[in-house]
Amino acid sequence: MITPVLDQVSRSGGGRRSKSITNSKTGRYVDSVIPREKTTDLAFDATLRAAAPSQARRRKGTSSQNAMLIEGYDVREKVRETKVGNLIMFVLDASGSMAAEERMVATKGAVLSLLLDAYQRRDRVGMVVFRGKKAELVLPPTNSVELAQKLLTDLPTGGRTPLAHGLKLGLDTIKEYMWRDKHALPLLILVSDGKTNVSIKGGDPIEEAKGIAREIKAANIKSIAVDTEQGFITFRLVEQICTELKGTYLRLEELKSAPIVSAVKDSLVMKKRESDAM
Image (cartoon, rainbow, N blue to C red):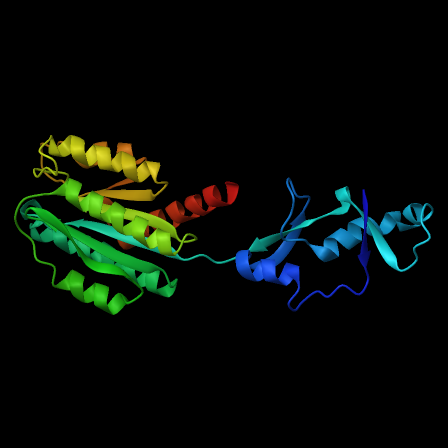
């Protein structure tokens, strides 16, 4: 079927295409493609270029001289490029087993380096802390690095290790944020020695934590698990949880500024590519 497109069609203003772009399309127009389905974001210029070489042949069967004749296979759809925000959700173990000075110094140093990197990139950062019998959202997603830094500096430690609670609250906070901003790319960063000993529903605390880790993976949330366990005898529970998360696993001795920032960047780039492929 041949559809006439008038030369005088407006390319901006209150027309249907502008309204469609305003309502459902964002980002800079960078390229065009042949649409797989009916397009709602017509690349007008690319469509005209595709149709132009065939105009003389098409006009042989019509008396129209004031319109360009477009066939279905001429239609091109816009490819847009847009910047999306990242949400970095820290889930920090502040239990008694984390109280050793070198652990918290290394943990705070790495998190502070991430906060600075997030601030420079205008990412939002949230922080869940778990200790005692529960987890607490001490920092809802924000771009205030000063507030996050103050909370981290004054972070108390002690008590038992409700790891499953921390993962669950981190997951719930990300889901709530994503409900408001569906285009954000979330990343959960767990920092713990994995010695969980508090259950949510009365079951095995380790299995509960693994189950929530699988929920995080199923929600398509990228993750990094930083294992702070030290000593001659280690249980590698964080590594087991990281396996369920399908995340990036780091040891305490790798908790330096460059490796953790690089891991975050790699995780978010991978997430962005997966989102583009969907």
